[in-house]
Structure formats: structure tokens, C-alpha cells
Length: 247
Image 1 (tube, helix red, strand yellow):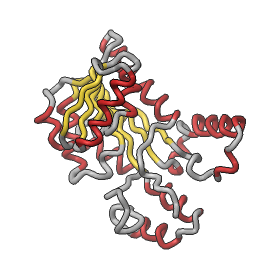
Image 2 (tube, one colour):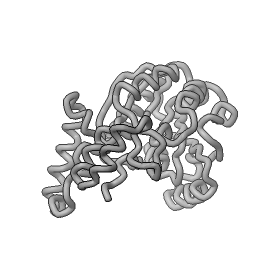
Image 3 (cartoon, helix red, strand yellow):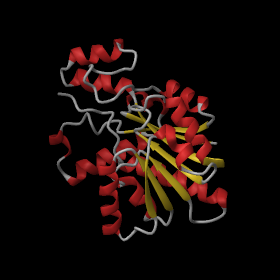
């Protein structure tokens, strides 16, 4: 079966994009430490990396098991004083955190699964201070079609093209996928101004494992990913889109 290219994960290209966004936010604030909210941050893979840069992170997630794993991870990393968890859903964010309390909000792989993406973004908007930054990562549907065609899953590819939510079957773990225009419009409905759009996982999921076994091949693939991330013509091939936006 074709890989689920909608599942969020922090690739090197994505991490580089997040770091740039954090650097820009810190410059706006005139200081090094930021208040960051990781919405749907789960077990804290990204939150711990952000905290390791010297920022304070609040992870909001509905899963108590994920938050328990997050606590163990922060203890192991020696960052318990910089990461705290709050159990709750995306649309409850305004009730969980004070308005205007965050400098940066990370929303990765959330809009694909929530009941109301616009409501989630508006709650995120309220949580950010004026001028705050949003890092929005969404699964992109054209890449789902391509990956399934290449894997010989033609019925699933056809389902993506005909399904309103761009799902590959009724058993798809994601409720919806996006394209650049749709994701940008959604961010704007949430009150944000999109300042940049980058592609992530443009080729990594399509390359056969045997073609990236050596260190040299992996380095070449990473170089391809980094260069493709900012190429307008290649954005449509990316498994995920990383939108940078401001409140």
C-alpha cells in the first residue's frame, strides 16, 4: 500500500523553515526567548527541539497518553522547566490559554483532522499576540494522487480525485487534504496573512529505499529537498505545505 503522505513529521527542510520563522519572530520581539504554542504537539518531538533553542513551549493536545509521553521526553532532555502540557482540542484553545499570550503558534497536521478548521485557526489567531507568527503545516492532495499511482494503487488515486475531502478511501485516517490555494484561503479566513509557502517531503516518499541507502545518496536527496522547497513549480509535488503567516 502507498505510504500515508499526510502524516506529519519533522523533516530537515521543515525544521529549517520553523527555525527561520522563530528567528524572525525573535527579531520582531527584540529578544531571544519566545512564548511558543505547539497545537496538537502530541509527544513533543517538535516542542522539545524548539525548547532546546531556548524558547518556552506549551503543548496543547487532546490525548493524555501523548502528553504523558511528552512529559517523559522533556525529563529525559532536561527541559521540563521549558515545556508544559495542556490537554484540550484545537477549538478550545481560546478557553485554555490567555488571548495574545503566544509569540509563535505551531499548527502541524491539525487542520486535516479537526471538526472545523476555520474555528481552529481563529482560536489560534486569538492566542497569538498582534504581529505573532503562525507555522501551519498541511497535507497536500496532489502528492497523495501521485504517490498512489506510483505504488499501483489506482483505485485510491481515483478516490482522491473524486472525494470532496481528497481522501484516498473511507478508511483514510485524515478527514481532508489541501492544496496551496485552499490552504492559503483557509489561513486568511482565520485572520492570518500568509507570507511564505514552502514544500516539504517533495521527493523523499517517492524514492525507493534502495536508492537512498548510502550516505552520499541521502545527502543528495536532502539537497534536492532543500532546493525544491522554495521552487514555485515544484510546490504542487510536495507531500506537505509549510505556510508562514502573521496575525
